[in-house]
Structures are given as C-alpha cells and as structure tokens.
Image (cartoon, one colour):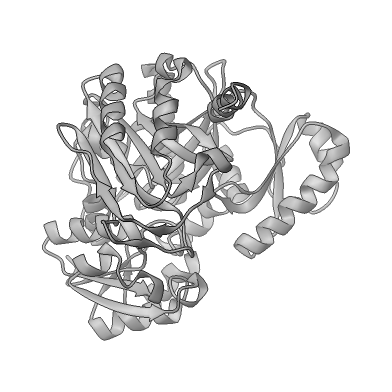
Length: 452
C-alpha cells in the first residue's frame, strides 16, 4: 500500500479522497491555489502545499508544480480526482517517470479510450453497439459523411467532454458552420480540434455503467446510473437504478462494458457511457477513464467504496469482490449537484461569500462538500458546491427523501440550484420515470410560459 497520497485536485472530490485515504491509514497531501487557501480540503489533509496563483493553468494544471509538491512531501502516489488532469495520459506518464503511482488507468489505456473516436473504433471491434457515424475523425468531406450517416447528426470533438466541442445539426445547410464552431471550441478546450460525426438519437436517455478492473484482467460492472437530467450536456441529477432499464438491458450493458474494458487492457475504476433509445436499443458514447462525479450513487446502491477500491487497485491489489456482488442493487439512490448558480437567470455562476449554511441530515442522506459558513466561493473554478445524495428502499421513497433533504438545505449569501432540483423532482415526468435528456429544457420552457 502507499505511504502517502498527493491529491492533484480541489474542492469536494479532494475531501472525498482525503477521507478514503485516512480510512485506509494513508496520509494525504492537499494542493491548493492561492484562491483556495481557505477550502476545507486544505484543512482536512495531513499536509498542504500551495502550488500557484488562482488561474488553473498556473496551479491545478501545472504539472511541474504538482510533481514538485509530491517530491517535497515524500508522496509516492497521486490521485487526480476528476476534471483537470484526471484523464491526461501525459500527466499519468509524467507521474510514472518520476516514480509516482498514478491512481488511475495506465497511460496507454487512457490514450485508447480517452479519444472519443478511437474509443468508438475499439468498441466496434469489441462487439459493443455504437452510434452510426464516421469511422474515426474526419478532416474533409463533412457533408458527404453526414449524408451517409443521415441527418440529423451530432458533430463531436474527438478529445471532448463536458459538452464542449459538440454541435447538433438538423439541416445540411447548417453543417459547415457547426463543424467550424466545434473544431474551434475543441481546439481551445482540449488543444485538439479533431471532430467526428454521429447520428443524432432522438429522445434518448443517458445511461452509464461503472466498471472496476484489476491488473490481473479481472473486470466487474456495476448497476447502471441514469444521468438523463442534464442541461447543455452537463449532468444535474443522477440516479440508480434507472427507471427505464429492465434487467435484461442492464445485464447486456454490463457485459458490453466489461468486454470493452478487457479489449483496452483497462485497470482502475472507470465509466462506460451509453445512449438508450426509446426502442430499448443502447449505443456506446464514450469512456470516462477516471472517477465520476456521480460515483456516490453507485456506492449507495451497492454498499461498496469506489474510492477505496480505486486506491487498492492502483496499489496492485486484485478486486476484492466478484460480479455477483458488484451487481447487487440495494434500494434506490439519487444525487443532486448543487451549484452556485442562478437558475432563473440562465444558470449564471454566482460565486461569493457563504454567510449561512444549514446542512440536511437524517437517515439515508449524504452530502459531499468542501464549503462551510464563512467560506468564499472563488470565481475561477467549477461552480459545484456539493453533491446531495439520498438513499431509500425504492424510487418513490428516494424522491420523497430528496425533497425533504433539499428543503432542509440552506445556503445564505449566494443563489444555488437547490430549489430548481425540487422543481425537477416534483415534475410529473420525473416522478413517473418517463423522461429523456430534454426534461430540463421542458421544465424551463413550462416555467417561462407560466411567467415565472
């Protein structure tokens, strides 16, 4: 096992990793920018090192600073969290070159699966259903390729994520502009402007399968998470199990995810994402070669600690549970991403000082956060304040519990999305389980029509 872990991240995920490391008896090192000096993860870690000014390129994306912090503190492993450098194969390789264990997959696996078009080719070879589209990235003949796929289509950044470098095109006349915008956005966000084209699946659900794999070739797949409640391709609410996935489909998705992980030689935790069409067919989208923001949903319904599992796998330990154990579903869980945003003004970020904080509690309520009363939310980073996760015996009970917990949550001084989450939970479509990735737009349109 490791003697000390440096956490190359910030906010609530850094807090989550610190807690997992402490329960494993491993000291932790927090890194922080000048803007994050007062963040909870700095206080909770055994050691903390300032790695630079507020802008992330000068701090959390500064590989040299991160490696130097690991060296001066004597850390022998690096946990990247999610975002920032978590899916950066070059960073994983740099860790290895400096004698540090990267707590994640090998650089080669990241390269195979982190590039969306390459991952799609690998998935096709492994017999995993893929959305019809181009065979890898394309640089010319966009109209011909799109016509072969069939409009409407999606133009996607090959190195994309988080909804960046993504454009929907219904009419051929709009294709050229969409390609140009996607390429420019991708080049800015990922330093890679390559794109590919996929068929647009109408009214889909976004469903993903968590996997865990060890270095001996053992791979397990967990019950699905439904991430269909999203805005501009950013997930807002996740739940497990999905109300739209029957047992046979779940098992087929799990089998496909395991097959793809083995084809890539994958080890560590990760997530295979799918689109679920209204006719029940599912299609591979991408692999996230890291811990997911929504991992607590799976932890709640399985009773397994994914962060501790990830650390143990990186240390070379085999999986401590089999597929039957990983497939067990114990109740229902829902996660809410609570952001410092104003839903009534286009979800604009609203950083600032938290003057009051009341946290929900009671049975089946979990809040992963780094904030506290008196904390100032910086303007430089993601607006996520925390993740409210509830767990109950079944979906109706989980919805009731989530409504209760969201009602108890109070964040004074800045607007949050908590009330918006209550509106989603109370909507008839969400309550029935009959919705798709357009639900948030539908709710916002209805609210606007009512003059709210």
